[in-house]
Image (tube, rainbow, N blue to C red):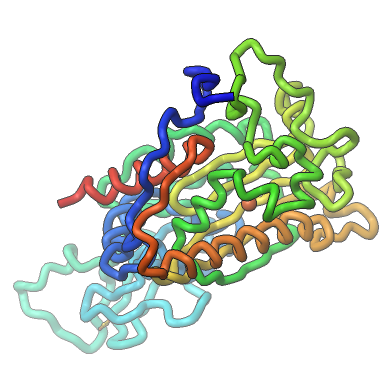
Amino acid sequence: MGHEDRHPLSPRLDHCPEGLPRAAYLDQAWYDREMATIFARQWVMVGRADGFEAGKMRRVTVGAAPVIVVRDAEGRLAAWHNSCPHRGAELCRAEEEAVGKLIRCPYHAFAFAAADGHLVSTAHAIPTDDFDRSAHGLRPVSLRVWNGFLFLNLSADPGEIWSDVGLHTLDNWPMDNLIPGHRWETEIACNWKAFWENYSECLHCPGVHPELCDLVPIYAKGIMGPTEALGWTPESAPPASSLRDGAMTWTMDGKPCGPVFAGLTPQELAVGFGFATLWPSAYVVAHLDYVRAVRIVPVAPERTRLVAEWYFTAETLAQPGFDAAHVASFAKMVIEQDGAASEGNQRGMRSPAFKAARLMPEEYEIYRFQHWVRTEMEALP
Ligand code: FES
Ligand SMILES: [Fe+2]
C-alpha cells in the first residue's frame, strides 16, 4: 500500500514533517520559556481536590512557581503564590501545615487571611502612610475542579479549563465518587515533552510493550486506533472491542477488578477505555472498572516527575482481599516501559548528530502537540 491509500478523514499525516529542534529537549533557556508561557498560562493538574484536607495548607508547584493550596475549616479551597508580599519569603515551609484563619509568614510574622488573602497584620513593622495595605495581600492563583481533579492556573486572566478533545471523555464515569486506592511516583531522566511524545504514538508499542500489545491487539500493529490504518475508510466496520477476546480492562489477566461502572454507553463499553489528554500536565485513562491519572511534572530540562494514581469506587475497594497495588501493577509496568523508552530517547538526543526528529505519518499526535507547544511559546512577547 502506498500513502495514496490514506483516507482524507484519517488522522495520518500526508507528509513527514520535521520535529522540534534538539534545544527543545536540552536547553535551560527553552525550558524557562516553556515555564513562563505554557505552564504559566495553562490549567495544571495538582491532584484530587479531595486530597486537600480541611484546616491544612499544602505546597505544590505549577511549572516553576511554588504555590500553596489551602482548604479552610469550612472546606473552601484557595490557592496562593508561596511567596510573602513583604520580602518574598516562603509562607509554607513544610510539605503540609495546619492552618487556621490566618497564614503567618515565618520570616517577619506578617499575617494574611486564609480565606481571602488580605493583609491582617504587619506584626512588629509599623508602615508609614504611603504603604497601601490593600495592595499587599497574598497573590492569588486561579483554581478549578474538573471531574474531582484540582487544576491551578497562574495567569491573571485564565481561559476556560479546556476546549480540546477529551473534555467530555469522562462524563459517564462516576468521577466524583472515586477514591484513590494506589499511588506511585517516580522521576525519569528526560524532558517532559519526550514523555508526552512517547504517550502520543504507538509505533513503539510492538517493541516496547509486548504485554500491552497482547491485551490491545491493534497496538501490535503500531497504531492507536483503526482510523490510523492505511486503507481505512469511514465505512470500515469498527472493531467490537479494542481489547483481546475475553479481556475487559488493563489488568494482568484482563479481568475487571470490581463491578463495571454503571452508566457507560454501549459504545464506551465496546471500546473498553477512554483517554482524556490534558496538556501539559496530565492524562486520565478511564477503564470500565477503574480510572487512573498520570501527572507529568517538569523538574528540569532533563528531569520529569511522574505521579500516577489509581481510583476505584468504595464498593470495589471494600471487596474482601482487594489488592489495589496488584491491579495497578499492569499499568505501572507499561509506564515504566514508557519511562525507560523516553530516557533512551533523551540520551540519544544529546548527541550532536541529532538536529530534529523527522515525524512519520502515524505520529500525527506528536505533530499536533509540537504545534501547540510552539504556538503557546510564541503567544507571549
Ligand atoms: S518576608 Fe514575610 S513577613 Fe517578611
Ligand atoms: Fe508506550
